[in-house]
Image (cartoon, rainbow, N blue to C red):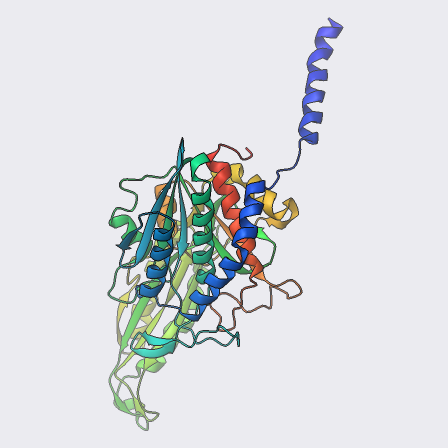
Length: 440
């Protein structure tokens, strides 16, 4: 009896010892070899795209360059999806799962201040104003990394199990008013109709992480985002006799101030975070004329559907009643367009693939970031199929990420080592997924 009782305990101890002694995940040798082969080309692509940025729904040159390279690899890219999207499928030589990889291509209406030798000097028109155009969010790097992944996968296609869809997406930063585009439009136009992936991966270079680090978390990662517009109607009068009209400037200022209580006093922040931000105020043309109208616009960020709807109602309520208190009226569009849902990482997929990220970055360099109030229309892809989206650190070692110029800053300067880590991470998770590897 004693031996029968002790045997399971001994086996259990052996199992625990074996688990503790199991080797750490290792970077695939083919990943290291591909990274070495692609290193110079990744930098060359990135600098070319950086010097020639294009706004959302205007990515003609970028899309043409992408399609040209894919054709040079013997692929047959499908172009013109959601205006300038490019998609290509790499068929492996062995049966296996279907996987999609996504990179965004568009730039921002930001005038670059980095002083880089390949800095953008491009200008364009955005919302009726002339502005500089800059890859201030790192999409030049994302596009370059996915082109490099295409090179690597095509080179090993004969031994590749399954198939991979490369998705080069336009208009992630948001389409101009009155236009359609981005991930929702790609789905509307059937990007997954004939190729429904079993999973999708995406990455983003991120200034709040040090170069060499990767950030990933299961479940919600980035917030839902919605845009709003509030137009305040008053009555024009001379600035010297404000009693002769209705001042929409003062009413608008009061709306902005009172709206701050929506998050600070009406929203249960112990549950999940939320943000209401006013980004633009437009009104008036001369210093001594009180105008007829003032227009406000901004963004709402949430993680919970109920909180999202309540903030919509609260903001419209504040706008209507504060304006009325000033004798003004408002047209409140809250939201004024289709927003982005919460970006959610599939828990099982993320747990399975985390060891793959650790294999290329080192276990201590793969961290779980807090919930991010930034948003991504990649979330629409993640609603269709299981997803893992991760961040790649882009702030040079020796620089504090807390003080480094952030994504969307005119001084945002990606450490180009992020290209190498992003490439190796994406190729490792791709190969591990296709070959059924990964932890969990």
